[in-house]
Length: 189
Image (cartoon, rainbow, N blue to C red):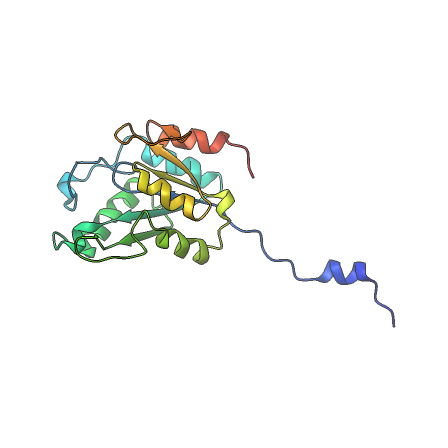
């Protein structure tokens, strides 16, 4: 019995297409940057336009993944439970559109971790968990260290706000709404 290669190829296993995601820093992107540690609900303010931007990105087929350094945990200022409570506030404000939260609980003065940005551990974990294609992903952050973590894994970055100067031809936006416009108008890889 003869089997054609065409039939074999047509019945062969085809791996699923890899997914795409937006990695979001928390402070300064999703909520107001207060200049020091924010861990109480009374000081936590979701920035204007965030829920609408998240809805637009979700409608475009992106996973929405928060990646945040939370050094205050390592310093004993607050706990993981405080961070999770504030994440719940963002979720409530945005209609529960965020798919995951990754956080680094370390600070170089107390403990080292490959999860802490500018290292890329949080992004690597999410890339594996969600089977993401880095070329189809973006990171929106307000610090150079956010963009450095993205670059380490081949993810494009957009710097929001005006507080941090960075060299080169880095894409910038005033806020998450502006970053969303850039992402949704960018050519697909």
